[in-house]
Image 1 (cartoon, rainbow, N blue to C red):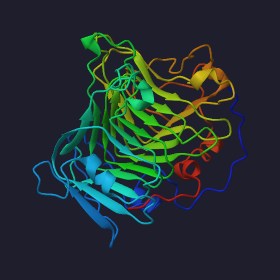
Image 2: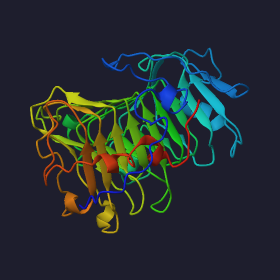
Image 3: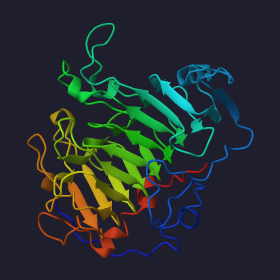
Image 4: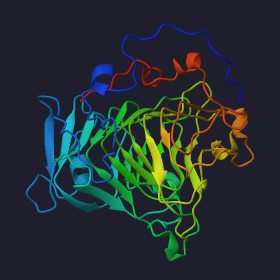
Length: 367
């Protein structure tokens, strides 16, 4: 991997590191500067845009529908403006698919707590489908979002597939999959084990920009993966043990197309109740053995616990991480380390081009 220093550029008057209100005017709930909210944390409620249509989901029948999918089905195809689906507290055991023909959906909890509404299912990659075959990794998602301009706030997305149950070899089990552009995931939790959060795009030649803010993301193997250009900001990245009780895994498996931006982890926290030096920050996923891909993951201004290996990147399926784009910048904590050939660090000049605004490419997420 070559990280050629770039000529320093003029800094923005309000860099996108620190307070979201000052830096972006996003109007999103931001995590406190110190002390993580944890999985049970609460954030400020987000008010949908004035005049937006609202559909209410409630398990007890007090809303318009009793399932989330029924509410999605009620949204007209090719809706030109925002539709809010407000979900009342409860656990909704179902799979949900938001097709590409239904953009501008805001899926939100009726409360401000991210644990009050849970959407959960247990399909895995190897789970048999009713019509034959298996679901595959992407098809295993509890919630699949293929539309552009989607927002989710104050919700838990869970895949509770039991890896220890036996009978299924392919154990990848996705909690949330996105494949659209201009996706906002604010104060959400994505919980699973292997392949928890799939941040993707509609195809290799299309951009899928995703802004994840103040999230709880939990897993053990490649649990943030895909080809999206994604920012994971002010989030709690939680490492968990494998189903057999062992420690070991990988946070990120980007599958970035050449010439596009991959994953930017920034202002976040990586830790968990796992063994010291047992987890890698990431590895390059050349999906389908595609050598033209150029996976990218940058981890900056993030606190790394001792769970992170001293050599935090590793190869995957015969592809060397050193041939792709992996680097750190000003990380802290027991899992951080000095620059070396096994631990590339951005220079200050390079870091100026690796900020949130650079990743979002002119798009400013807003409520």
